[in-house]
Structures are given as structure tokens and as C-alpha cells.
Amino acid sequence: MNGNENLSEPGEERLVGADRVIAVLTELAEHPTGVTLDELAGILRSTKPTVHRALATLRRAGLADLVGRGVYVLGDEYLRLAFRNLDGRPEHARIQPLLQDLADRFSETAHYAVLAGGDIVYRAKMDPPRGAVRLTSVVGGRNPAYSTAVGKALLSGRLRSLAEVAEWFGELPLERKTATTLVTADELHRELELTRARGFAVDDQENEVGVNCVALPVFLQGSTMPSGAISVSAVSFRCPLERLVAAVPVIRETIEGHLGAGAVR
Image (cartoon, rainbow, N blue to C red; front, side):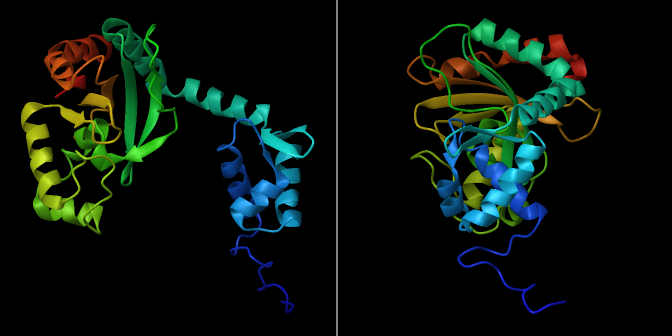
């Protein structure tokens, strides 16, 4: 080992080889209209030669493209691989028609999300066929589990005691995203108990001001734990939470119609 191998380049964290390439690829995904080499180097706190080498590797694989003078975007090959993978997942073929049905029936946005640590990840989304206001959620996007209906629907089967809630979330209180966000272990424990009792979760503008949501856990793989959750989300001025809650029996019936009677418990 020579004396330079343990030296990071000035101003950058210790990212080497594939770590650097992945960091650049991940940051490119945050800039759909493109980002320059200088901007990437600044965001990643790395030197321009280091970022440029990572970009060159990604371009050779078709995972990044140079679309203008010094402007980079995700490559078409990356998008092809991502969408081919999404379309090929068994759950996608079952979930997408369900979300389409819910969006058409209620003229609101339907989601399918899974739990990933302390967050939820949106695996599928269907916007309503009409309506000027659309939600900002995206497939692959994340939100905190504690402030979303899908998150609480999924956590309600896992966290059954106050101690389990406190251990899961760690440092408390949590970030208060809106005035109605539940941020303490006591609040979340009571909400998860209520979610279990009624069989669905609600988001009363807890993750985003002006957006309400109801969600039901679904069981696609015969497990005792849900594989994900289906939600219907709406802007509050167009569809108050009370109207969404009243629609839960129809949402449940629609889910069972697509996924089978055992999909909702």
C-alpha cells in the first residue's frame, strides 16, 4: 500500500470506486432537467475530476447522458431498466388495475406503498382522470411512515406496545411536518391502536398541509404481515377527510374485488 491510498481528495468525503459512481447516479436522479459538473461537484462535496470520472463510467453504460454544454441527465438505459423492472414485478400487474379503478371511481389519487425502515416508498401511483390539482408524490419517492396513512397502516401490525413504538422511532419527538403531525410515542401508540381497531389508517393533513388520506394494509403473499398498503389521497378542499373515511367500505370492496377476499384483513 502506498502512502496516498488513505488520502481523500480535498473537500470530499471518503467515497471510493462504486460508491462514488452510485452517489453521482443518485444525485442525477434529483435533477430531471439536468445538472452541470460544477453543480454535482458542489452538491457531493467532491472534486470535478472525481465526479467527471464517475460520469464517464455512467455514460459508457448508458446510465447518464450529456445533453448540453456540461449538462448531464439520467440516461435512457437507466430509465429502460427501471421501467422494465417495475413492469415485470408480479405485484405491479395486480396493483395497477386496482389503482386505476380507485382513481376513476373517486376522482382522487391512489397509491400502493411499502415499508422501508422508518419510511414508506411509493411503488405505484395513479392520478385521477380529471382535476386541476395533482399530488406531488412520485413512484420511488419516500415519506416518513409516522406522518402518512400508508405508513401507519403498515406499522399498526408491527408496533403493538408503547415500548415497541418508542424503540422503532428512536429519538423523540419526531419532526412536526404540519400542525397535526403526531410526534410523540404516546400519540403514535394511540393512533396505531385506533388503526388496528378500525382496520384502516388516516392522514389528517399530517404529512402535507391540504392533503388528506385513508389507507388499508393489503396481504399479497399470505404473510401475517402486510406486503404493502393501498391509499386514496385527496386535497382537502375538494374531498374532506370525513368523505374519505365514509368511502372506506367501498375502497375495501374495490381492493377485494381485484386482489381477492383475503387481501384485506
